[in-house]
Image 1: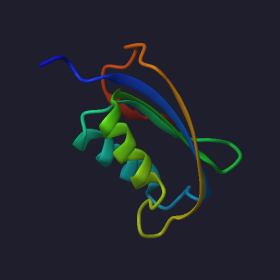
Image 2 (image 1 turned 180 degrees about the horizontal axis):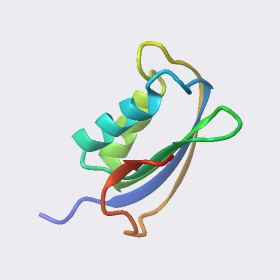
Image 3 (image 1 turned 135 degrees about the horizontal axis):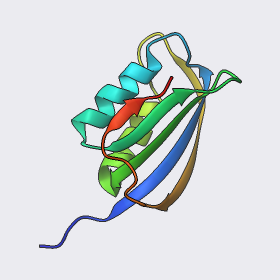
Image 4 (image 1 turned 30 degrees about the vertical axis):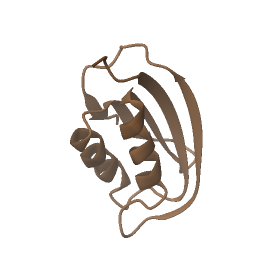
Length: 95
């Protein structure tokens, strides 16, 4: 059996997503699925998530981002798909 397709996705999450544990929620979901990349707060109040890994797990992440942690109010998730570049070794929260 061959290796599963590795892809990259960038998500920008809009709504009440900063200061509600959103980045830690993303970190937990990424670690559960062995995704690599990062999440960070953006100056405009959005949260950015960049992940690489198996497409099926990134699609699971996308679904989870639409909900977020209990205090989040997600209005929109903008997704951009790309080719995995293998630059990430772990998943981290950028400050």
